[in-house]
Length: 360
Image (cartoon, rainbow, N blue to C red; front, side):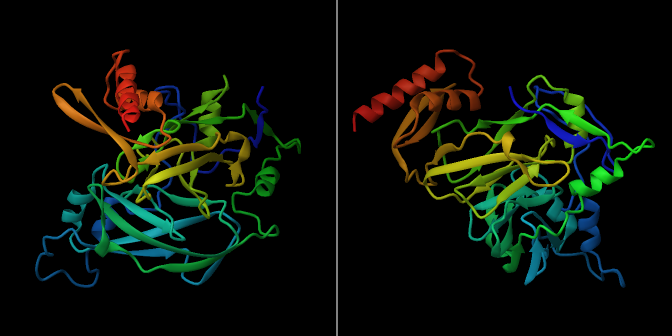
């Protein structure tokens, strides 16, 4: 019943089709072009080009972080923009050892929003649906799951202006004209409309702490997965938390990039998500899921009305639950994240939550 999406048949330069089926979500290899530094680039930045170091660099993982794009006091045409961060480490080897793990990230705050985070070594940082007007952005490093305050950058000020006269470099007009074949006909590709399905967090679940990671899949409705990967291999999944001034975007088909947002206030939150269009860089509104609500308990469980304890393999786990939380979904979420396959597990957890709430 969903309507199709029509695209130019032209392949983007530098990319062919790839197919990786995994668990049913469209995947791809290799990942999209990166704007973050590679290890080689980090090592190059740490060296003085004109003269060799007289002494080895200090044994520190400190680095100077700066935002290169958009430039300070610049104007950005359109509502989508890429953000480029430069990381200049004092000692490249020590920095690599400290930050080359899944809990280390580079995080961005746009207009005072919670930090959206990407891998330090790779991953294009993109925003879409930015509201017209002035914006402020700064970056900071995260090491082993903790923000590194001394790495915070100066704030960059810029302005976005929606201009219908400015065509994006990936705009549809150019793609259509370049698609004219020898017979002068424009070749078009018709795909089944993809649907973004948010899996984590479930509706009205309470997350411990002040961070959330978003896990989703793409439902192609029986469409051609190879054709989808060919045309969407460089596209993004974009999330907007708590009606922020823009959607933060992560690579759609890169298995190594998990959308992550941190320093959320304790309490109720909302998230919306969409997929970007291969020809316009803008959202495909039809791919969106319904607004999802979830809670964060806070680092001291400030937002939890009950904290239940569950014993799993002789290890006691504490489960904070906020007022308005869904006990059944909390049970499925807890058991799923712990890898507990017992059918009784969700019901046992939900029962403990309901019992604790009734005692209030």
